[in-house]
Amino acid sequence: MQWLVLVLVVVMLTSAVAVLVLKDFLAALAALSVVSLGLSVLFVILRAPDVAMTEAAIGAGLSSLLFALALRRLGLWRNGGRP
Amino acid sequence: MPDTGLLLYGGAFGLILIGIAGIVLSAHLVRIIFAVALLEAGANLLLLLATWHQGAAAPIIVAGRVPDLMADPVPQALVLTAIVIGVGILALALSLALRVQRAYGTLDMHEVRRHMEQDIADEAGIDMPSSSHAPAAVQTARQESGA
Image 1 (cartoon, rainbow over the protein chains, first blue to last red):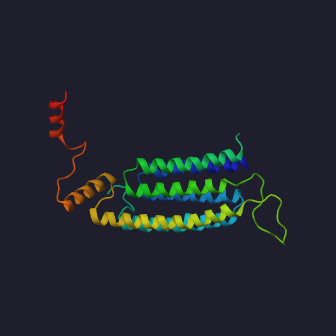
Image 2: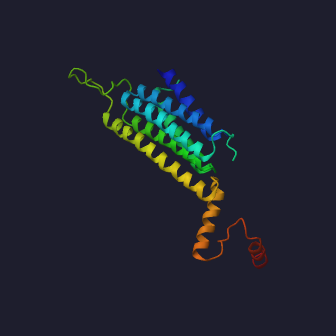
Image 3: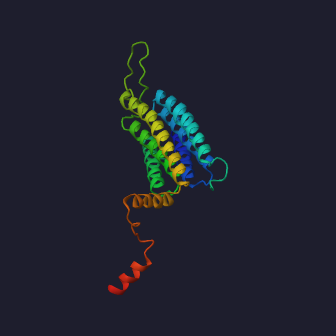
């Protein structure tokens, strides 16, 4: 259990840094949903299965969809983040 | 090997710190909204950790029997609400970013601030307020009078 938590925390913190560092906004969005999915596995370990379900469905699914649609409207979809 | 609670608190505070650093240091508006999402995730994890015990059971009553050591369901319900409200906040922020881009044609915060100050000055009918970037004449006058 400890090793699982250690791996999850390390993956989450590295991809949280990657969200801020990556030039491509689509890649940053993928890193953000990695953070959300890791958080939902942590919620299962914390004995909160309902919160884990909600986080996986809404945090990783719906908000990623929202961000992706907004990025397409803003014209940041596939140009490496450069306007 | 540190214990599990310490690791989890480290993860929560790490996410919160990275989120605050992103809000403060980023210049791009979409990047700031990404950082707000990270901050939300860290805050949710910290809230859930506040009443967590090692080895507690999930707060589910099976066949009328309550487990001896149970995780507290109240912060879990709170976090459930906070996740949904977080998506609402993100949607509002993204729609505001869309409006900003439609109005000013850019998402860079420095450009947006310059445009907004120009708009405010035009509305009030005064000159642009001078800042530390622009006024070469003011700086030379200051140097001549002061030192």
